[in-house]
Length: 317
Image (cartoon, rainbow, N blue to C red; front, side, top):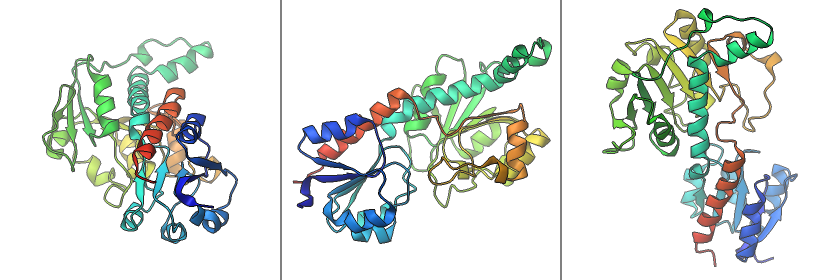
């Protein structure tokens, strides 16, 4: 078959994605059960491939896609694609952080409010007939300084949600300059270390960001602080984070992602996880969610809409 209009889907997505592409003249082949070996065998027949996180798209697989024009990920992170190699072969790599940024911003806000006001613990206690007020006295966000590392789609969305809470938002981004806006003031890491009461990271996973949050990093903060991670689990060295929570340097943590996640983000086996994970799941200083910050009904649809626009904008034929 001519590959010009053929797109291979190896992960399920919102039906808008393939329906609108088909309406635009593409032929969408939905093959959610194909193995990686089968994808490699058939990839030369396609101009594009759409994935989420089922497996990695690396050099050996890319080389099989001799007619590939694009790889599209229905999500924000691109760490499961060898983007550098793909682009060296003239293959466009697309993703859709615009589609789930609002969901991430809201989720981070919700986790922070729950942690500071002891909502999870208080709810559990009341359901057990336990009525404790003083022990569940909360803390207000107002007046705090919130540090954001990474001021792209996700970091900006979180800063937008903080407007109206009476906070100071300082943002650091290694790859951006002159980005101060009505939601955040551009900052240096040194200023974050000095002033932050709450830290939220919004980073991709790369060599330079793997285990960025570790003992030496945490100990640079002058204040004890609360920590939020809705980015990637491996941005954080969990053993060090737990050590700092026990010491009181980290007052509490909101973790939507965990270092122990597999590529699919769905193969977590608590029985085989280390002591640090066991501490996290029993601590009332920690709120955990299963990588769902960007996982709303609305973002599911918006991600599809973003990718439709980006794929249609390519000059494929």
